Length: 299
Image 1 (cartoon, rainbow, N blue to C red):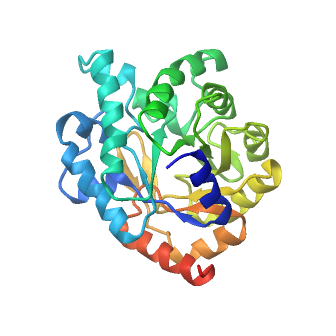
Image 2 (image 1 turned 60 degrees about the horizontal axis):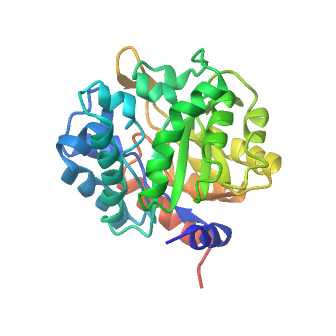
């Protein structure tokens, strides 16, 4: 696949994304209480990642999102893995997702705070400049873009300033990119108005879709409609289950509120990439696929 084919599919839409990789791994008995989170399995049990990707492909997901969200040169260095080994693991994340049988592979690029593994990915405001954040993100982006992915997923971005860094870092990468923020109550996690954050991507040639992920499902439609108005680009929608992550307790609080039928509202709001994030498993993704098939019959 290539930029043209993915962009054409996005224009035709909707494209069904997968769900939370972490919950599928945990359901299969793989503990993720680790600073590297699911990226640990790239080094230790890549076959577990393949099984998780395949579960979503069998549920109807057209996109497999790689296990590179928390895979960084800095994070692997803390485990004693050098740059060459990190490059190999980043490439493996793409190859494993490709082997799942999904139509497309999205290479996940998580925020700086994911590397810190201290909950700051849900706060932003790291005290770094845009230039410093761009320097952090660019090496991983270059490896993933060269590894055969179809699209880069700049995801769970908590801060408009980090979004600026990411948009700069993907310039000239040769792949289409989607940008999605982790948002709450009409703001980024760092407290900026979502309209301001979405506008960061409005003029980027690489960014082909903008929206939200890992947020409350009930807030998605309004946020996506705003993203489409501000940028003129298709929307992205893949919220979590509606439960809340407690970074201190390292656990989820509250009850699930993800309803696959909400995909109809997200599509109506302008979303063309639709799926789920944390705690949204293959069963719910199958429901999203059915909802979208009923909403937008494909001839």
